[in-house]
Length: 289
Image (cartoon, rainbow, N blue to C red; front, side, top):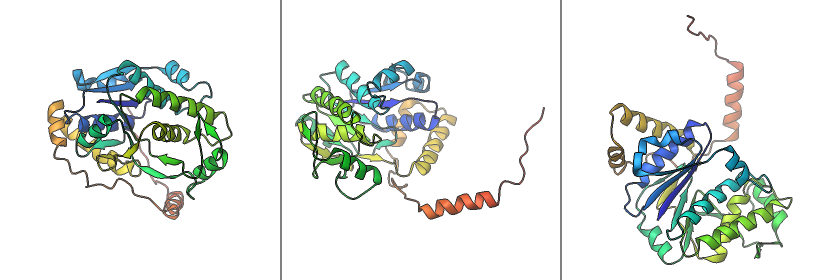
């Protein structure tokens, strides 16, 4: 299978997360090719010939958002571009804040059987949850998009991982684009439309499975993971290790040392802001030449 990451923008966290993610996957022989679609190719020269870089720019990103100027449609279009380029390969898309904790044997087996995978089923769209999900359900319930009926059984899956079998990938991505555009044309809250479009399209055309026991996704605790990743990368860079040595180190990494999710109480965050306001930094001094 081919591994795909989409990274863009100036935030360094996104790029060192992606670097760490790629290193964790490179240990698995089932990865045929690692493809990074990015507007910052200079951040990935470290990998030399171990990855393929597809360079994009602001014009490409703006084109991908059309016709409804929906930002996260760029994720769908990046997947489409790689499927078109490598139609014979299974495709495994991952967000940068993921890692391969075990191996890809189970995912590969599912793809060979023509099944798709996403990270985890979060809940039926109709389940009482966040305000965004409730608004989406109220807007979409009872309607059809790209021929897919939305009802109380329609599920929202986490799109931090999307694995598509080569036999169905082209059809799935076309259905995802169509359903995404049709939902964007409604009054639906847009924030999670891309995720929902992937969810309903993959499940409509294939059996859809979870891969949460294979791939970790730390979207709920990025602060601690970012600190650990930066320490890992800086420590190895100071020792002038090679890419292969980085990969070897990650084979022994303790993936359970840091929680994937850590939810802070709103009250704690509010109190911290009050304390910071009441007790501001007392003295700030800069070097003057």
